[in-house]
Image (cartoon, rainbow, N blue to C red):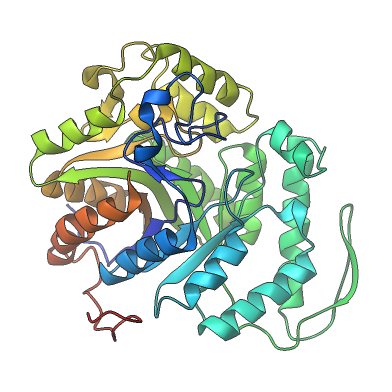
Length: 395
């Protein structure tokens, strides 16, 4: 394997719900502890509400284990990412917060002001994850009725105004979606938050090439990821820019491969095919090209979900996508195997890994105590930083 510089590793905040089963809070079936009207056996005992106490535990576990940052998601069924991240910044010391938000639902100048305030109050620990949105039904809930192409065009204008507001001088802009005069903030953020963005469509590639710092992709087999990186890198080069690349995976890792695969199988234990069909019908309506690519990974295997079908590449498992929108793949295996796969993606040019697991508290420790030390030994992760004790805890 080609020697790589240390990558950056993030964890995930389960602000919709968490639990030991994928049936908890599944895509399009929210509103009950079981996550499905047809699967009450999942039960409230498997459901963890995203209250501030539990989310604090997850954030502090990620910080203790040496993750650099944590992704706070956005969506109808999530707690607000800005408010949650601001609250947890007070409960952590060095953990950075990758705050996801939809640019069409907030003005770019106000976002610039919020980001500047967050940077100042947190000591520079904010990152921005710009989510253009791919589901018309959800966009409509917030009064947004633009087409997919229009949403990406608006995102491009949004990012232009956002960065202009941070420039240190009053910024004027007149476009199709935004018209601002003298946009600015009291003082430019120090440092300016990195801008993360994902999208598999041609329109998304254009926005990434021109406006963002880190391009994100959901986990796919290496050949597909390599193709996507090459395409986006070429677009950026045509704009005279270079980008960082990141990837989003769930993880199921244990001391042995057999234990890891048994844990993955338990995530799907007792699934009702009708429930899977309900979720897939919701996901099929998405306009997201990336979501279509996720669904294609388990096409034809939604009634049997055998490991031999859903392991689409060594240690890359598409089982999560049966019930979850967004990232639908997991790295499954022993700590060494998962580190091997991470190294393989790093060889492709991936520099940032956003990881998660079910439930997120326990899995943060499995990854942090098993995989990250192995990656540090290989030089693929930075050494565990010496940190002061988090409030009420010694480390």
